[in-house]
Structures are given as C-alpha cells and as structure tokens.
Amino acid sequence: MKPAVPSEPIAYLTGEYPRATDTFIQREITALREQGMKVETCSIRKTGAEHHVGPEQQAEFKNTFYVIAAAKSPIRLVRCHLKALVQAPARYFSALRLALATRPAGLKGLLYQLFYFAEAAVLADHLKQQKVRHLHNHIATATCTVAMLTSKLSGIPFSFTIHGPDIFFEPKHWRIDAKIAEARFVACISDFCRSQCMIFSDQKHWDKLNIIHCGIDPDKYRIETTTNPSAPHLVFVGRLAGVKGVPVLLDALSRLVTDIPNLRVTLIGDGPERADLEIRAQQLGLGEMVTFAGYMSQDAVAKTLADADALVLPSFAEGVPVTLMEAMASGLPVLATRVGGISELVEDGISGYLVPPGNVEDLTARLRDLLGDPELRQRMGAAGRAKVAAEFNQETEAGRLAQLMTPPAKENRGLHEAR
Image (cartoon, rainbow, N blue to C red; front, side, top):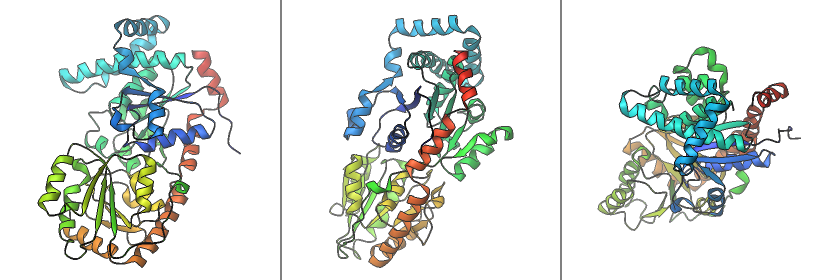
C-alpha cells in the first residue's frame, strides 16, 4: 500500500523544462504523480520547439510556469517583491542577506545574484498561490540558487538533486556548502556524488545527503532476441558536446572499418559540436557507417535500442547516465568509461566493459570484443537488465523521494501555521 501524501502540491524547478536531454526528470515527476502526489512544474526559461520531441514534452511545456516570462512584466515583478516585503519583512531581508552572502566574486557575480533574487520573489509568489508545500530542484547550479532564495523568501522548504560532474568543477562558485546547509535534504544520484558533497559541506549536514538514484521503468524497454552478426548495430545516446568524448569514439570506429565493414552506428542527440563531428566522420571515411539522428522521443529511443546490439558512451565525465540504464533495460551490453558513478551501475566484465576515458586503443579493443561475440552480448545484456530492475527502478526511487518530501504531520501543520 502506498503511503498517504498531503493534498497540497509540491513543485519542481529546473533551468529549462522540458528538455529532450532531461527525460529522467520528466520520468521522476510522472512516477511521483503515479504515487498520488500533485506536482507543479516550474522552469526559469522556456525550451525551444526542438526539445518537444514527443507528446510527453509537449504536454509538460503547456503546463509549466516560466519564471523569466512572468518576471518580464515590471508591474508583476514589483508587486511580487512588495508583497514579500510587506507580508514578511524579516524573511525578505534574510533572503537578501543570503543572496549577498553566497554571491560569486566580482561585479558580474553580484549582478547575477540580484537577478536570481528578483526571480525568486516571482517564483515564491506563484508557489504560494498554488499552495505548494515543498520545492524541489534538479541541477544544483543557478536554478538551485533561485530555489534556495525562494525558500528563504516564502518559508516553503526546498531540496535538490545533485548530479555532477560539472557542479564539482566549481563547487565554491555555486556554494554547494550553503545550499546543503539551507536544504531540508539533498538527493545524491550515487555514492560518488554523495562523497563529493561531503567534501564541500559541514559534517553536521551529512545526514541530509541521501542516495536517490535516477531510475527508469524497465518494462518500457523490450529485448530483441534476434541479431545479425554480419551487420551489428552500435548506438550512442547523449549531447554532442565535448564532455561526451565522441571524437574518441570516431577514432576507434575508424580502426574497425576493415574488420567490421557492415557495422552500423547511430548517434542519437544534438549539441554544439554536431557540425564538427559530422565533418570529422567524413574525414575518417565513416560517412556510410555513422548516422547522426538528432534528438528523438523517448519511444523512438527505446525502439532504436531494441534494434541495437550494444551501446557505447565514451564520456570524459559523468554522473550515472540514464542512457546506460535504458540500454541495459533493453538487454544490451554497454561500453562506457570508468568515470564518476558509472562503476556503481556497470559491472566491468559482467554487464559490459569499462575503459579509461580518452583511451582509443582500449575502446577499440573492447568494441571489437563486444561486436564479435553475440553470446557475450546476450550474457552481459541479461546481467545488465537484472541490475537495473533491482537497483534503478523509477517507482522505487520515486517512492523514497516522496517520503523525504513528506514531513511528519506535526511539522506539516507548523508550516501552514507559519504561512
């Protein structure tokens, strides 16, 4: 039996929602709703039409509150700040002090922080109108700053999910320490992620750090039992950006052209390096082998994975990629790099292979091993699906998140009295 949840909604805040690359957030929201929670979606900016690749994204776009769009009305912006100041002056100035205390260095950092404070008042007013009882943020950078200030202004508790790896490149700039201190709890997507948070936070706040995996519904991914050994199909899913290491993959593929001439490779995703990567693929003689498919809907990705033999992700830095979970749920072996929290999902030699990032030789050798052995792929695929079903199920992870978002009854009454 599912635990009872309060009737008041919670809210989710991200920088851009919905995005084609952030389907894990959409799935998490869906799973929470299926558990009886009302979820208001909020986003700082609107996403472009290129992200509305499926009915899920289109529906979420129509029902999301966009902070900057609302704040562009000077009358509304001033009204929200005046309401916050008049209704709770102590909170207002406390939030302003927090904004100034956690600002990045320099004039630019100050200006951006004041923008975040301005946005926070607009979001706080919206959340109060919707009677939101808890605010949750994904991606602990600028939007988490807005969430923290919104919480301070409104008295509505907030939490956030921290992913990495980019946040850990500049933890002091984004004041992870202050955000952890101010949050009711923090959802860390892996043990690796939690350990990084422990480095940059006071030990007295470590009990706030909870492991909540991003998850998927394994039943939405089907397993194909037929393969074509003479024409294996390799898939990559991710942003076409530097961190994903796609040039290393292209170099490895160029070494397989002679050995596996009928190999098909589908690159799903888009990004700032797509044009350069397409040129590089042509220069390496991979024009017939590699297809740049662009963004796809969730259903289209699932269908492509069902037609594939393996997935490769040669990233230089990662958290715990949902892409790998999707492939493993589809019964595919995966080839990834030994970075971030990937080793908590992929067991080297059991459900796939892990190679050093940037190592073309090892990546090539492991691709040759996987693509040349159908029985190995089937064995690894079965192990991977079992791993995902047991430890990365979105319903289970959403249930744990829902419990953290639901305070004891006494605390919940106190929140309403404070308003």
